[in-house]
Length: 428
Image (cartoon, rainbow, N blue to C red; front, side, top):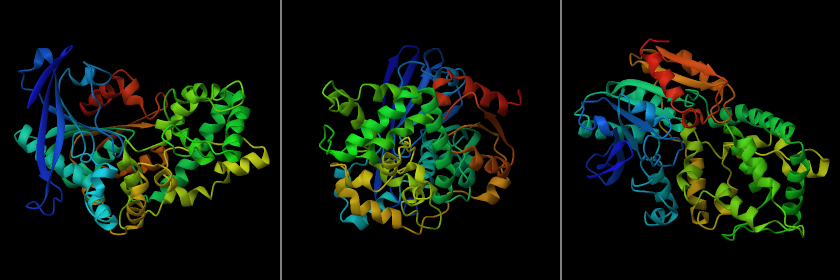
């Protein structure tokens, strides 16, 4: 273990070996990393554990500096564990290169199938036994982390003392198609709101898209910047300050000679590539997969919403709409670092034998105190799918708010977590 100090906190690194496949506990093992954070003045206190499950899928837990954001509230009464979910960060991280070592595309797809919420929960249970002495702990799940928390409540509720979910209540039986048929209209509303706020962006975005439609533009990594790739930065519109970020991104898109500015292309590169997080690109739709293939649902459903056809918008004179938190096949094929995963990604998308992620009967009989923040205008995890889930989980108390966006936990300065803790305690 490695222990170090930051302003007001003591941090300890933990590495635990877990089975790659929990149905084969004697088989291959991988490493899972987690970072313990405790207030410096409570380092030796007997505090309850709070496991934090990061959004994603496919991204590591935050790397804190002191008592940032929600941590300040949590550290008042918890010893926090920031989990790098398997395949991310320092937890046997998955990259295109590491996947190549697994064998052919079929072997890679089978390997990736072991990196969903059900496996993450089983990892957490092994870590709980090691760090918490088998005592139940609390869980805080943000976005996809909330999905994982719901899986935890379904299959290992004995391990939980209480559960807090923020922007992370999926439809229990919703398939990927249902998710995107619900989210595309929300994203369209966000586009309209952005253009109402920044009316000059209508012409500017069209000008950028026209150049991309008529010229071959490349990003610094050599990958093509297409109209569709440009549209994909619309995920920003689901964040609290995302509309403003988008405006500032496009306002300096052109140099004086009419060419796309190097600064703009450099800023676009990390927003359209998932080379640093291939799990997100390949497994994003799989987090909705239960009993049937997802089949690049966002790509298929997009045809039902012609407003998102950027090239058609250029011909008709309509505003070019950005897309949201969707993944498309071209995100793999156009990226030099992800292109080797093309066949693997297709096999994952075609996989039909995804096991259940939730147990509706167990959730209907839930006894774990639980509270959730549901964001009224959530662009990523739509309220229309979250609210039926609230009703389906016994004892789950939901706070539906329009005060925050999907990133409310990060930007609220601890207020959201404070509200959820108070809700579970029966103080609100």
